[in-house]
Amino acid sequence: MTAHATSPTSGTPATPATPAAPPSVAATALALGDDALVLSHRLGEWAGHAPVLEEEVALANIALDLLGQARVLLSLVGDEDELAYLREERAFRNVQLVEQPNGDFAHTIARQLYFSTYQHLLYERLAASDGPLTGLAAKAVKEVAYHRDHAEQWTVRLGDGTPESHDRMQRACDALWRHTGEMFQPINGTADTDSTDGTSGIDVDWPEMEASWTASVTAVLDRATLKVPEGPRTGAWSAGAGRQGLHTEPFGRMLAEMQHLHRSHPGATW
Amino acid sequence: MVTKTPRATPQAQPTASPQDAAGRTETPLEAELRRLAGSVPDPELPVLTLAELGVLRSVRCLTPSSVEVELTPTYTGCPAVEAMATDIERVLHDHGMADVTVRRVLTPAWTTDDITDEGRRRLREFGIAPPRAVRTDQGPVPVTLSPTRTTAPARTATEPDTAAATLLGAPEPGDAPLRCPHCGSTDTELLSRFSSTACKALRRCLDCREPFDHFKEL
Image (tube, rainbow over the protein chains, first blue to last red):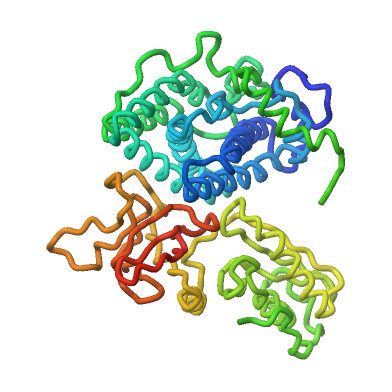
């Protein structure tokens, strides 16, 4: 069980029709699946709007990789379509970072840098462990390596570019910084956990991973002549709020767009 | 080019089929079905068959008329998997299997090393630079930052073109240089890390000036 039984709609993960995963792993699969799904949708919003064609294609390809990962992860929890299209905002368990609006290209790159570094480190660790997510992680870590590379290269290119690109990249890094702390809150390690051992079904040393993340991001920002942002790494209202179903204002609008077609035409197929 | 439905082959008799269970040696029928399924062309890269792409994992007969096929995706989100599954089902149905199940498996993860030599040759012929061998350890690890310009080889005067042609920042696949599939030059530059599909990058040859796709190492 993840949290308070929120959504009135079907398909809430409160009682996962778990094909193979024990509840704690289902909660982790849900959290990571939601991360991938939501970021995939955000990146998809660039289609038709990216600054150059190559980037349009790149962002769409990254979105596609994430969508594939989301499908595998959510399928461990229940029906992937019901989970994606019929849950209310409060039932999503993604970190708030991934739901942040695209902003300008620099914002999207900063979000990619922060998240793909996190995701890459996490999948590396899951791939090396032995659990129900190992297979997916071993596969996805190779894909995410390219996402991370893409984000790092662009961070350097924009940060160490023109004064204008430098300023905008710095602003983007600063603006999203406060959302980066929550990524390292142990998943399901909150008060609502029902696993008696207090674990998330995965074996990750979060503080160690956070240290790796910070070192990596710092190195990239240094190389990009950007300052490592200062200030708290979590929102003033709550730490780890996304994993508990609390989301920022733009998320509701994103979901409305993402779910509108399915909800308007239930059961429609091509 | 591969014909879509390779129907020529006479039926390998389903006589010896359901005896395996534990021993797991492939029966003649299974071998035949695997050959058929493997000869299905990749929907996105029709110059390659599924066998050459290395995505067909196993073919197992459950009864003389039902078969289970294991297929692994190149990328987790590869949308071609569904088309592959449909094509496999059709070919095996045509071969008299009433019940065909195609299962998607993720483990062990597909790697570009699974593409056969013949597959690589066909890719090159088609104008796509084939992937180089992937390192044996954990696979692609990014992290090394490269110059901000996306021109590829950071050449130093001392080294000729072998080590020079490694991709920027992207996984460093050991030894072999990346060659333009048109003229064979190793002097190429990266235009975009992602191209028409997730599995390819877009590059340009600095000698013949032709742009080309490169099947990325994975």
